Image (tube, rainbow, N blue to C red; front, side, top):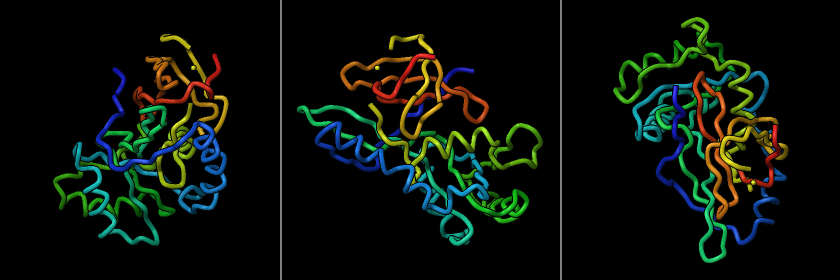
Length: 217
């Protein structure tokens, strides 16, 4: 199966004046994430397949219908970094088109009982994804959950990182993506980033990382 492109339309912008400011921001991510209950070991992560370009609308509908003390629904985003007039600008964009994620401490069966009636009444929502073993096993696998909790910060966003030629196999050696790796698809020398492939949710997806955090495998 070919790689899925993870680009989307912007929903916010952040302006940073230097690479040092970006690095300073990254240093506190792990600490902030540890304070969020949604990243706790007891939490189950669920993926909901939805209509493309309706992800945020689905999140808003779920937030109205699910108990906020038990559930959080979100669209994972990533920082899209580019330079303009010698200023590093970071624009936040959707990461996985067609997916909304739900995190909760409830069991998979409880999640089905709470979410399935909402799906049946909403034409933008298609189904809760199984982890590929049995249809009732809807919680993300240990590996997929690890990828999500490693990639995302406390705001469910993949921060910008600062590279390697196309076709090389690399692994991230620093910051929140540490240990994740794959095949390099694209090198952007202007932005000092690389795009590489990794296995997630049973398919190959792409992720952009800053060069300074990369080492060869």
